[in-house]
Image (cartoon, rainbow, N blue to C red; front, top):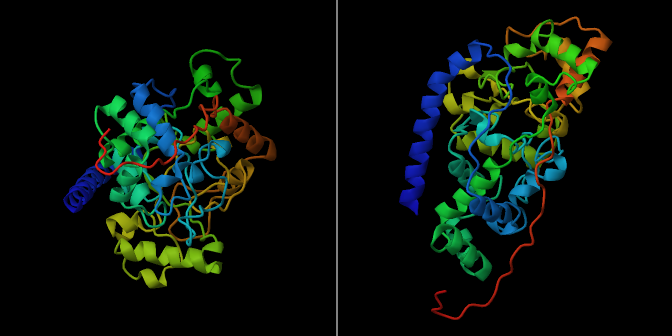
Length: 370
């Protein structure tokens, strides 16, 4: 297991470096807006098993929280909080992104420290991360082996007993199945001009033109895949609440960020690159399903889409790190409302949120091998 962890970490570092080296070009060119591409559906048996595991708290260290605790279908597969709760005994300092369309992103996490094209590694990171689920993979495997129903499911799905890799692959398959469908904006792009209201269509014109949103929110995911600073001052709750403050300090210390003990703002991409010019840069989030995932920004400090549009209309935040693209937009109240209506058109039919009945532990006979 230690050798496996070392290899996975090395692989993640190499993938991240490769993505970062190519990321600058992505942030420079505005791609045309496009409908979400059709992707190959993951194996249905893996998805079904992954759904159970996604909702099962036994994947966490103390068996009290599951993936769905922070990625709750009732909150757009996010959690509806400014900043996530974190593993029991800690509070986190960043907003929870939606799990919808997660595998179609370029990077995950606000600081972009993992590439989205390796979903099993992302799942492993969530299970093992001290501030998320804090579980030892060996413990998770043993728990699965004490649940006959899971043993049977792994054998029928993979042809063998539960392993850490199969657990990760199953949860990854379920996450990869969470993709937007029946999106009004996509139907509009496909030729159905009635799919979006007149107000939303006017908002689209603003998005592409006067408001300039498309400079960073472009392509099929409405994200340039790059990193920008909005000049935000940190959510004051990070430092007002000792549990969040401790998590904030520990996180940056663990990643080797210089001067971590004096930080008063999230350094973003800099915690990965350690480069001063990446200070406070955050991953451009997708706008798909955005109306379902309030509150907004990397620390959840803006409560509504109207607040977000108003923030951009005012030219962003006051920090010196602010991207040079951010300037006051001069949008009228009506134009801001139209932009909000367009953003609402980016949400589609809710993904299947069926919560599975979880199998129970059962006594096993010593030496039993079923």
